[in-house]
Image 1 (cartoon, helix red, strand yellow):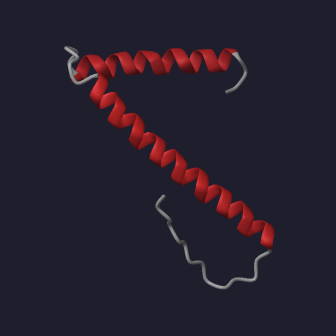
Image 2: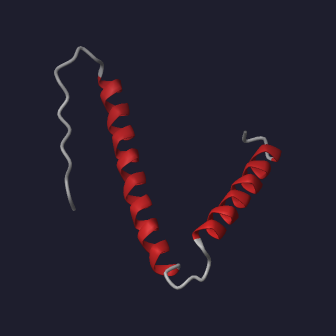
Length: 77
């Protein structure tokens, strides 16, 4: 597994801050890696699609609007 080292200057901050910072950094990296993996998988799955870019954008916008409406109805937004 790859390792990433982040150096932070000596600051007068409590241990809890650094623990939260570590969790935030780990979550950010995991999200970025997951995004890359999903994009590669989608590229592979949709490589034979006959939809145009414009059609894909239109469908994506329709899905976004429907999702927003659903989340709003559920009280999440």
